[in-house]
Amino acid sequence: MCGFTHKAWATFPHDIGMKEENALEKAKETFTEFLQASHLRKTPERYAVLERAYRSEGHFSAESLYRDMQTEYRVSRATVYNTLELLLQSRLVVKHQFGQQEAQYEKVVPDKVHHHLVCTGCGKVKEFSDKHIRTTIQARRFAYFEPEYYTLYIYGLCSKCRQKKRGKK
Image (cartoon, rainbow, N blue to C red; front, side, top):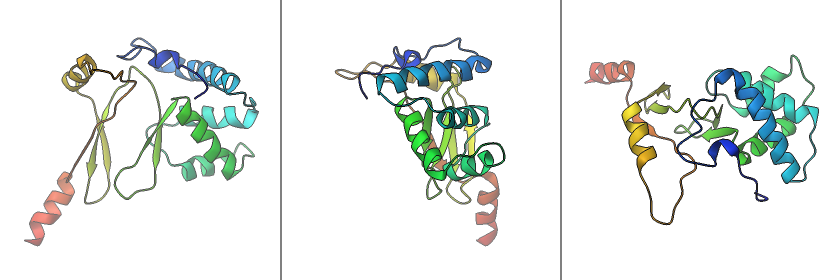
């Protein structure tokens, strides 16, 4: 990664205190640093993808981001996919693979740590936060390993799918 270090992830636990309204400005600064360190061009299209990703709520796919951008921006599908890859490398977005669904992305807001409940029946994803889980994981030290981030997925059946399953018996 060209020696690039994301300031928000430089120490674990996360940089608590970063407000969500400042997240886009911080992300632009971080992305600029990343592009410069990687000797990549700072194009308006790349920043448009970053901005759209940071203005989205929740999870989004590359295709849905591309479709949403077509109303305001002239960006190619390849630009969206390639920029998402750069945003992953710069740790400004994370990529989730929930079961068999297409990959989902979401912006990184360090003080908004959450986990995911994934229904194996319908594929629905629900986010939840648990201070005890977060504190336990962040306090954990590993020999010869320095964590940068983590994610937690819990797979099971949502109440609707559980109900359907019971009705079939």
